[in-house]
Length: 354
Image (cartoon, rainbow, N blue to C red; front, side, top):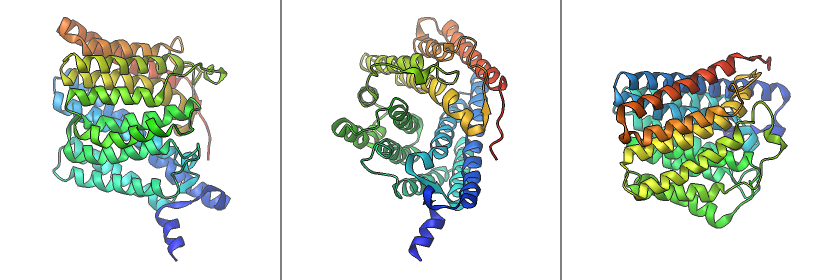
């Protein structure tokens, strides 16, 4: 009875499900992931528009909530691959309903948005704990995602830019997987995972931003080389994006310690690390497989999109040198990146999966 209940509430092992059941559950899981990703794109575009109109409060809410939607969509789509558990239709629908409800209530600033968020985080944590953790290389990077979920629950309650910790933790999990470094490094990995909720609590202090950047750089490490796996249309941007993302962490560490205003440090973290990694890992390498389409190319030269976003991050962070000019440059570069990504996506064709 208890096993049957867990099967309904959480899901079942992929190799134990019949082909028909797996296919039906897969449809629910992927549709939820797709909905979260599409809504995140809408949120990013809307947030950029609000910035141009000078509404910084709504801009911030849309960009931050878009990040949460994006990484919930990415990580949920990968759940069977990372845990060998296919979420049940109940699990998928609950994750989808709570995610979208939190997004709406957060953007319009309804007082109970954090209660919905905590419900989402609590259930997702239970879903991950259910046969998704362990020392095996397949399971080990999930420890970073688990810590990110705990930090997300705290961030939803406390508010502000603390929400960036969840996408950073998700990125760490993805980087360790895509670069083939899934085996445990117990000291630094456990230190990092245990520290994230504490750092989240104190993230409005610059020393916490510096510590977050330092520990993140330590846990993702410096890859010795990028092999032939990064030579395809989908992955050619990753080596440069990965390198620039790491450089951004070093810049965040330095400017946090020299007294650059916190809001500017956050923008360097958001654009220079998160957006650059998104543009070189998630957007070209993962999303085509989630939204079921193929690309003929990614960017005009295969690698310039993360470079554009990195320069945009620098312009936004050091805008005080020439405020109007550098802010305008930063926004224009982000728009160029949006357009290039859109053209790249439209260059391909749909893939029939079902």
